[in-house]
Length: 224
Image (tube, rainbow, N blue to C red; front, side):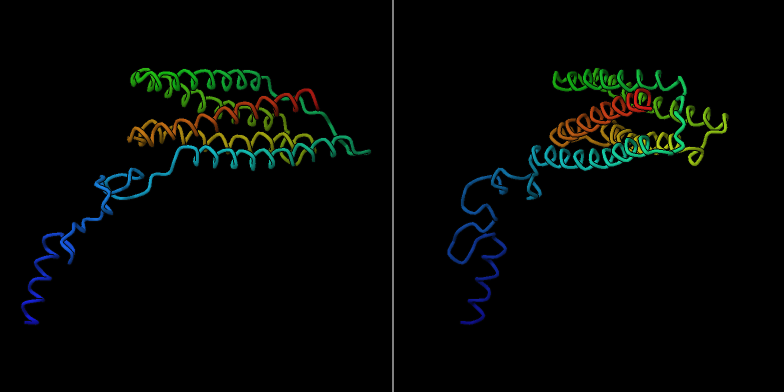
């Protein structure tokens, strides 16, 4: 008898049924696809897009606080008595760089619209254009630093030049992160749902960095 019971149990396990004759395939008796509509075929729970958007808002708030701390230090340091502050004449190429970055936000918006319209070719064209403009902006910033260095103006030359290098350098590093994200979406993000979410959060980040640069540019030119 014990051997007969064991044999029956083994047959039940192989047939995918529980001891009570029911199906134990893992759908919880709901007749669904096995994930309750909350995940993919692997059973993994899908994170909703709003979670990524909320996470990006929190990240952008942290970045904003980081830069505002430097802006506060800039204002206080500039107005200190006997601060030996010498206003810095920024390279003219910064004007061109600013126009390039503003244009990149426009092309990114166009790419986003093309994605919503399910125009894959148009999306890839405008997204790649945005990436190119971002790289062009960073190259322009490097040229600006080289022009200042040719004039003998370095990080430690004066408090004003120190803040200039800190502002532009920190922003440039954050923008490089945005360029990497653009490249990821262009070449690696393939699943439609994940790709749409990536496009949304990367667009938020890029537009923020664009607006942040316009603010810093005006601060360095008008607040010097």
